[in-house]
Length: 130
Image (cartoon, rainbow, N blue to C red):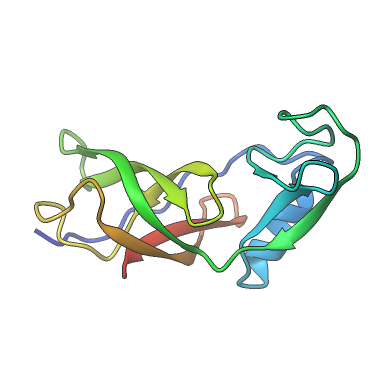
């Protein structure tokens, strides 16, 4: 069942994640990438969680991935899907799946990034079926 979409809640922004939200406002999904070990990581932070290098940069993601896990929240005025999406770059994000039949979502389903304004006027990445 596809339902009216709820407005996402505004996340907290700070100096380490502001470029992530600025890119989202421009319609881009960007991730932190370590120049030493070559791995992406999320949640954005200055130090690589894999090798502890401080040589991290922002790189754009293609925004394609698969649903790792999800839960449909139904006991709310506007049902919605909360999901972990594993991007093709290897990182997993907690996000919402939108514009989808909530009864047809499946683990392993391919999704692609979209963007929505929050209740605090910050743009966040969400995902739609591919």
